[in-house]
Image 1: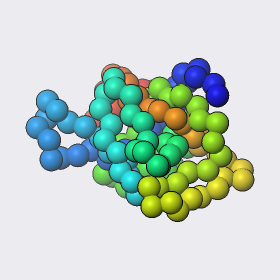
Image 2: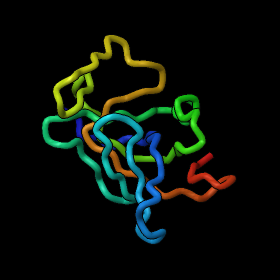
Image 3: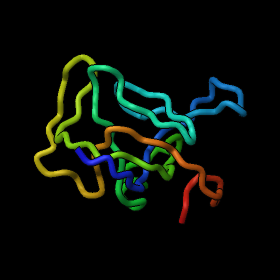
Image 4: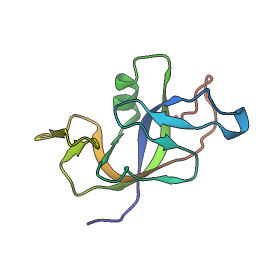
Length: 121
């Protein structure tokens, strides 16, 4: 298994339940996880792997709802070829959709702000 860290993009939604200084992001799908800047996030036990995008364009195409954010991240590529949630349902990627990658762990990284969004150019 490769432990080489790569750069990518994570699509998340902002949680408004925390004080601003403690704001965090959560994934936008079943099996929601909490993501904080500069901390590694791993799948819950019995779940995995995490989904990221390799290009900003692909991430932005996926994030069509205004409540979703595209944030730069670092990720550890996963050797697995399917994703599943903790109840055991799995989805096999026979061909990975354009711009999507599977990750063993994801870390959101802060970038300069552009137009109100935390994205890098």
